[in-house]
Each structure stands twice: as structure tokens, then as C-alpha cells.
Image 1 (cartoon, rainbow over the protein chains, first blue to last red):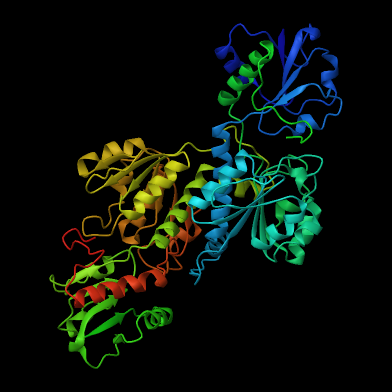
Image 2: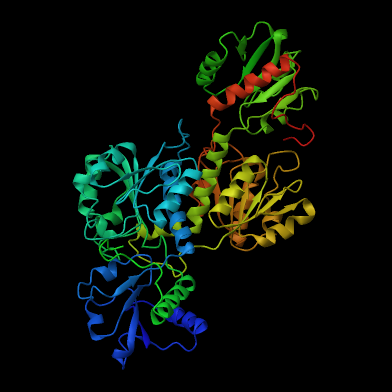
Length: 308
Length: 308
């Protein structure tokens, strides 16, 4: 019985160190170095090469190294019987929430305006120094709900949208395609925290933006493929969107010739909103591996039909 | 019996409107227009001309239009028997807290680095995407305590420093001159929320900065006169301070030739962190005015010896 780590182009030395600390006896391989492929019963994956698990006939479990599993779900060669789990980590949640709060507060306090003013030595106190935000969160999972609660604590009006309706204190919730317009009517800032699935891919497109109030702000911290980037540029030109704050992109790193680099109304960070903490992730992965061996129920298992 | 409003260079039309809505019968004057000076028993003040209250022999109460009273305290011609009150407003508190959180989170998430990276089309994910902040708050009044609690909620380590020790949940508190070094040893970010008094004026000076850990960050949202601005520039050169985020200045508006405008490590906003909401302030002022007339105890009275 062995565990396989598949994370090409990622430095996993710290992961190996923590595995060693947690379970010095554990037998594991790091892809592509694995002599006894039939011994592998579980894998830990991040952006694995599509189809690579075909070489391991006895895999029963694939653990994502992060909160998202879209990088696993997009591999249609993975047997439907294989279980897939993800990381749920309070540090990761805090990290994501703090990123979103930073973006929200920069708009709320008009910090970008004051940065421009500084460049031109302008002292201009706005009569209304704060932008009145009505904030919608799309995707009300663990991360979305934490953002909703924290924004509420800071005094903001918060609305939630999700696939199935979520009950969150002091948050008016909408669900399903039929309620999307009602949701968008309430808000002037949209925070995208959706999982990437076959039904959410490209959901932030021009026809969607045209349903929003003119001048809305969009924050995307989920996945780049949720947003049609060309459509965002058009929506800004048309005035539906006034500004965007993006941590994720269709192609990462963002190509040098991409229009976002020089766009004055688009703020970007290089996918750093929330980074998996291996000290939290490794114990979860090892725990599920032992549960698998002991035929116990797995934790943070995803629903393969829902894709999250 | 009449009330006097003294707020030169400030548009008080909204204040007059709200007074009218709250008490249409109220007799009040707007300085300098006042025929019957001896009728004035209370004043509402913001940056009044020093000595102006000498013309009103029967004043018993001066209400600040905001949370701070330093603009009143600095007028030594005001009779020591005159009572002074200030505004305590939950909207003002939320507003201040949200400003501080914005500044803290921009540092924590290294947003300024990512803004520079964007300018030069650099995609660079930090190995440690978050700066590990240990935050000290100087001045643990209503506003300081709210910031401390909210920062705690966001997962930050918070330390408090004040004149007299304050007990705040999950905040290690220091007090008095003898504990200042112990306080500064704990922190790498200082948030100044002190009242401006004769003993705090210029407290943020070079000898103070040299007691801090190298590379510390300073945020001042209280009063410009707490900070010796020339000393801040030296402390940045010497490496004690790595960056400053300032909303208040010795002279406001900040003079065009001031070194802060072009300093790459100093972020400035034009005294907008928290603006008194007249809808909250006017009822408090009118309530205290009625209490004065009825010889009832005043609310939010300041201690003239402490100067806050």
C-alpha cells in the first residue's frame, strides 16, 4: 500500500518534510518516480498531467492539495468510482477572507482614488468619503459564508447566491438560475467564490454583466475560467462594470501581452489570495489515507455529480 | 437661552437642517452672527478661533462636533469651569475601524508590492504571500478597542497600550511610560489612535522610533500633531520604519512641497478615515444641551485634566 504525490512544477519539499514528521513509516512515491505502481491506492494531486492515473490500477482516492478540485474533475479519464477529497483549512479560510476584505475596503474607502490624488499632490476630501456598497457573494460554501459573516461584522449589507439556498444569519440568500436577476438587482459589488464546474465555467460573461447595475465592481478570487476576460473588458467599456479586482486568470501566469496589465480599472494579484498551508493539509491527507485503509468514511469528500 | 455653532471654514448646512428636524423651536446662532451674546449658554465647536468664547460670558458647555476635543483643549482662554463633551458614534467607530483594517490588510497581503509588480508586468507569487503582523494599538479608547477586537477576529495578534491599563479580551495590554519598551518589543506594526493632549503631542518622534523593531510599519489615524514628521523620514532612512500609512498631518491640507507626497513608502489620505456623521452627532448635542438646561448629568463628558 502506498501513497503517490503528483504535483509537477510545484516545490513539495515542505510537504515531504511534514509527511516525514507526521508519519515516518509512510510509504509514498513522488510522481513520476514510482516502481511499484500497483501498490498505489491513493494519490495527492495538484495540476496532474491528464491521464496519469491510468498507470495506477488500484487507486481508490485522490486528495486535492487545496480547497478546489477542478484540476482533478477536468480529467475525464479518472474512473468515476475513485473518491475525491479536498482540503478544508481554517487558516486557508482566514487567508481568503482577509484578501476579500482588503479588496472590499479599498473600494469602500476610495483608496485607489486617493492613491491617484497622491501622485498628483491633490488633497481632496470627498463629501462622501465612503462608497456605499451592497455586496453579493456568489458561492456560499465554507469560504463564501466566512466572507459573508465578516463583511456583516464590518457593517456591510451582504447578499448570497448559491446553487442550493444557504441559510446564513443576516444574509439574504438567493439560489438557482431563476433568482439570479433578483440577486443582481440588490448589489453593486459582486464577489465570485464559486467552484469551477462544467456549469459555472464562463458564468461571468457579457450577458451576465449586462444584468448588473451600471458601475458595479467585481472581485474574483475563485478560478480564472469562471470569467470570460474579453467580456469583462467590454462590460467596463459599456459601463456595467466600473472596476475589477482579480486574483485568478484564464492563463496563469498572466501572459505579458494581456490587456489586464495596463488597464487602469483592473487590479491584479498573482493568485495569492489564499495559499494552502501544508501544515494543515498534510494531517488531513494522511488521516483520509488511513481512513481509506481502515475502510472508514472519508472526510471532505466531494460529490462527483456536483463537481465540488 | 441659546446655542452657538462655531465652525468656520466648514459647511454646516446639513447640521442646520438636522437641528431644524430635531428641534424646530431651538434658538441657536451661527458664529460670528449673534446679537445677544449673553443668552448663549452652550456652544458646538470645530476649529473655533482661539479666544472667541471670551465674548460669551454665560457659556457653561462646549460640545465638540467630533470624537476629538484637542481643538477645544488647546484654547487656554476657556474657563476651566466650562464643561466639554465629545461625540461617541457607532457609525464613526465602524468607519475608523474599516479604515484601519484596510491599511493593515494592504500590508498583510503585500498589496503595494503587487501594485508595483503590475506596473512592470511582473507575475511573482511570494513564497510567503502574507506578512506576519504583530500589531500594537496605542490609545485603547472606544475606537482603539473596536479596532483591537476586529483585528483579533481576523486572526491577528494584537497588543494594546494606553495611559491606564485597559482589559480587552484576547489583547495583551500595556500601560504607562515604564511599559512602552515592552510593548514595542512585541510588535512590528503600530497603530496610533491616541487622543492629542499636552503629554501625547509629538510622542511619535525619533527616539520613540528607535525603540521599535527594525522595519516596523506605522499607521496614524488620530491627529497629525502626535507625529514629528521630519523624524519619521529619518526613521525610514535608518530602517526603523519601513512604511507609514497616514490620514492626519501637522498641517492640513498637506502643503504642496511636503516630502510625504512623493515618498514611495508613505501612503496618505486626506483626513477621511472617519468623518462625523451629523445625523448621529446632532441628537447627542441637543440631548446634552437639554440636560444642561435641566441640570442633569451630561453624556460623553471629557476629563479636563486628562484632556480627553
